[in-house]
Length: 393
Image (cartoon, rainbow, N blue to C red; front, side, top):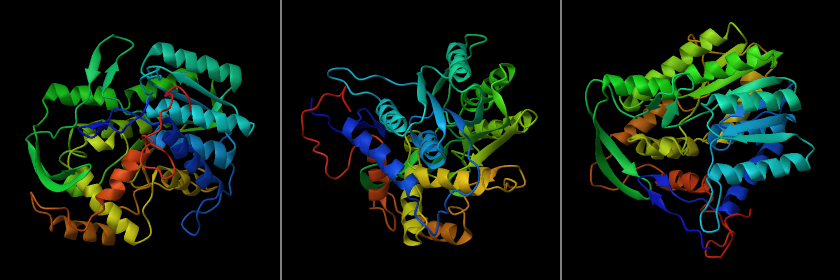
């Protein structure tokens, strides 16, 4: 089977197994040799047993890689994946997980995965049993779930998340991946019910259910910590993000962290804008990212997921000092992105954009390449015309 890149409305429909292997192995190689001076080596004790809920792509995958190959941790991943068939590719997360676990075991590390719906009670119990059997307890729980739908295990009700503004429609300039022409996008406002459902899916309720179960089963070590990921971004994206439905869900996530702090050390990490499978479908964001990527690259501070998570572990969670947070108790890994000088330059370039004209002052090619890479495409040295079996990596 010749596996080709197929993208519909910024959603990739295919993944290349050899490219996904490269994607994981490149991250492992970086973690084994982080690039100074921006990235300091590990100097403090790292967690030995790590659970990553949503650990097959994006920040979750990078968390697992940094924990394992940076700190020597045994890990468990929970993620919802589609397996490959004779004429059908798997999700990139399935390939990523297989490659990660192959390398982890070669290095004497325990590595397990539970494939299934992380929202379900069944998967939670199965994971808890695995922790009890293999680890005894866990020292770090990373919550990195991005899903459009959730079924509440207690009621059976199904909720769907939406990426919409609240109160009134939002119109702004944007670009589509692969096309540098600036367009104008209008997103209709969410109903009250849609906002509430988005909070149910993307808020902190499921995170709390995981921690409650692990605590009840006495699977949290004495020094256990947990972290979930969020984003704030610049004012230009506020209507569709921070002040929109997803922003309401992230605020609920932040409230949940404060509740969980009564049980263990709990944090929300506000991370940099990055091209992930989730962020690619947020209107306006690709244009902002194209401008941001170019500005940060010019200043030598552009980061991908691995670099961000390295800083999370080495300068925040496990720096051997009290974890630095903002006034709301959040870890701010978006500090380089939100540097006033960087934001000033991004806004200057934003004002140059005109509907129907080519993008100015941005790097859409870099955004596109990162998106392709997370699905296994766009790597030099891989023959994308070759006939391969999608079941083999």
